[in-house]
Image (cartoon, rainbow over all chains, first blue to last red; front, top):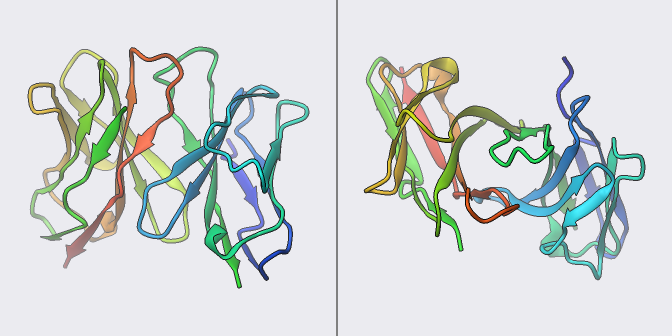
Length: 116
Length: 115
């Protein structure tokens, strides 16, 4: 069974440029998460989707970050414009969801973003 | 608010020796507790979780963790460490009684197993 797929794996951009990350969750997983992991830190949740609905985006910096999961499967996270402080690893995770609040999240390999 | 503390940034252990990676948590209700491992340039891999029931939880690759409610701890253990266990380990907690609260991660502990 394929795991969570993310692309690209690495991205280097100059500040003020836009960037987008793509995630395809494990087949059948209704819940999708985007996390940001800064160097030396644990992941921090940016947004959580239940199917196509964003149910928790309280930590998403909405002035420059946006996300979508139009058909309830794959998802895109965008930053426009990027700032130096956005350099981090962006992780996507998925879980079965469906109200199982002890559900295990499975992570993709992440996209390492460097903003110059 | 829920939180996780991993008091050691780095743990060094000799191959074949037992290892312990410490984790303490804080939640207002009862916790769901998780351990994940991260290898270089890889995402987090699930090791084990505590939901309810037996305080000793067994997981992947010979790892286990013991839930201790009185000490609010969930330390990760392995009887005999392997060099291949060297990685970054994250403890995470969710408050079971607070609806759809997010999973909160600790800062991670880097385990180095020396041959």
